[in-house]
Image (tube, rainbow, N blue to C red; front, side, top):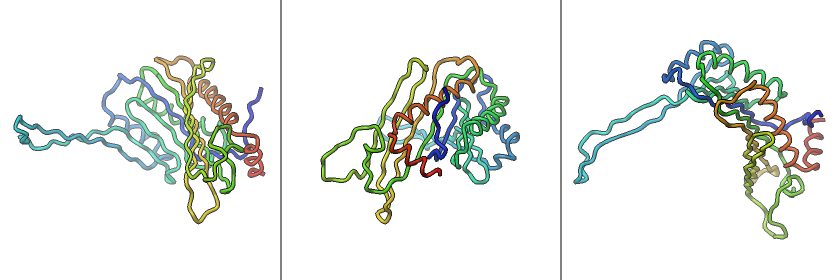
Length: 248
């Protein structure tokens, strides 16, 4: 049965993440080779470092050695010119992030697969142990809306005060799908000069086990189905109607 989708999905950020074991190299600088293969699409590069300082103090409490600072490269990030498509790699993780307008699943998955195949040829991971798929949705309301009219969650009722901030979080385990999900619904205080309120629905689904077998991208199709199932259980028909009207 074909899954329900929205013509005008309110997705503002989508992420595919692959975690793996890697015993073929311990030199993260070798991953810069990936940039040579994707430079046309991702011309910009950034490096993330961690810093650690160490020194010795004797039993009198006096520092005996000058402080030593250790700088370590932790991850390499590649950006397109608009910085709305981002790839990050380290020795155990690859992620493809898109902050531009979402078109459809096949386009998003296809781009992630294209660049993972390139990164994989450089990284040469020994096994994959976690597949993650995350979508952040942003839905705009006017400031008179009732939270429980649009979302299937509980809140305090029959009080005179307005709900200024709201954070709802839940972690789910689905044995049948062999997957888990972290779900957050957040309402943040808006600009006092605006009548609009933004609600963020953050759904992070993942499958994690040692040495995952089979076609990774078939697994991502299942994770996407799981994510969609959760989204349509979280929102009410009133929210769906609102989003469909915005897409007309």
